[in-house]
Image 1 (spheres, one colour):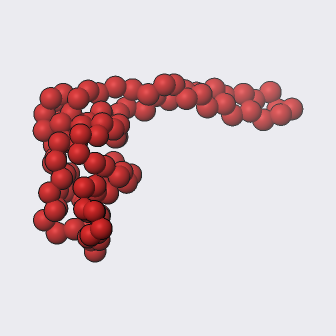
Image 2 (image 1 turned 60 degrees about the vertical axis):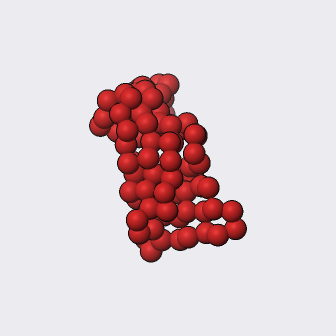
Image 3 (image 1 turned 180 degrees about the horizontal axis):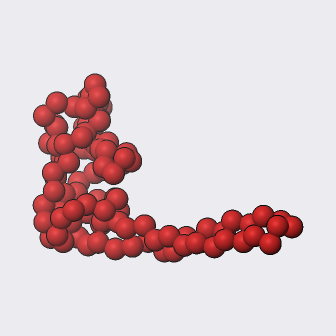
Amino acid sequence: MYAIIVTGGKQYRVMKDEVLRVEKLDAEAGANVEINEVLLVGNGDSVTVGTPTVAGAKVTATIKSHGRLDKIRIVKFRRRKHHRKQMGHRQHFTEIQITGITA
């Protein structure tokens, strides 16, 4: 069984016992989280597509940890103008483990 969920403005295809990194969630590590925005649920040959979400479907997950990704360097440079600007960014993430999918 698999599902397509929306969290943090992004869509993810998830299966039971899968570990994935999503945008930061406001909960402590070890807490259980329910994701109610389920766009599609597939079980073998049967596929249920929502309009826009599947009614009554939810995905439960456990938060494993929080962290930050590697630094991304941003360089803005204009030739012949004596202009150079450097910035960096580290995105926050939450690592979750999918514990169940109910349709």
